[in-house]
Length: 178
Image 1 (cartoon, rainbow, N blue to C red):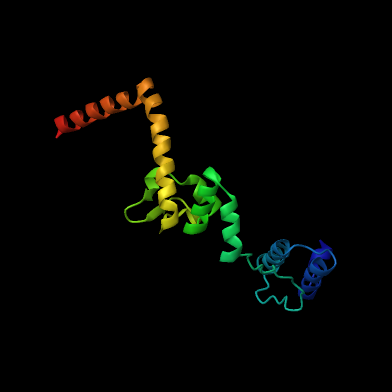
Image 2: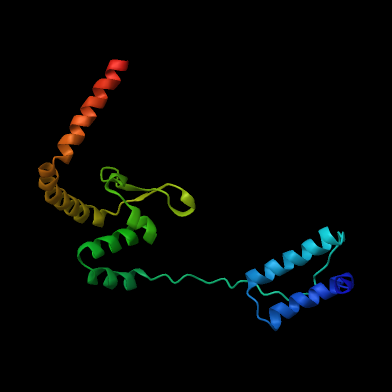
């Protein structure tokens, strides 16, 4: 208890400098220590004017993103083929993040307007992006191939027929209520 009572504001600045320089504490941990000391002096000791201006504090480094030029990107995209090539071209052409690309669904593609809807993107926000012209035809071809491959299996299982019957029953029930 006596040690805490003798702890002065200058000691707080010294302690923060010690954490930054000698202990090489990460900037986020330095911020946490700074806020803890500020809380201590303001709310525990009741000192409203607290000055830590002499403390050495390191800031987070601003990193510049590495962006490939068009000349560097073209050879990469030509090396990729199949589904992975299609995905890479879409990601590059529409400016999608990896998670947005993976979550993309067929219903999000609008070939007529040449746009796609990115749902629950960064910040859980929806946004509309361009559907690149060079990507539209390969994508349509891929989708039609998938549909042809899945349709016989779906009909064999009767899933689509059952879904249609259920939809028909629901629509009749809704009409009967109205």
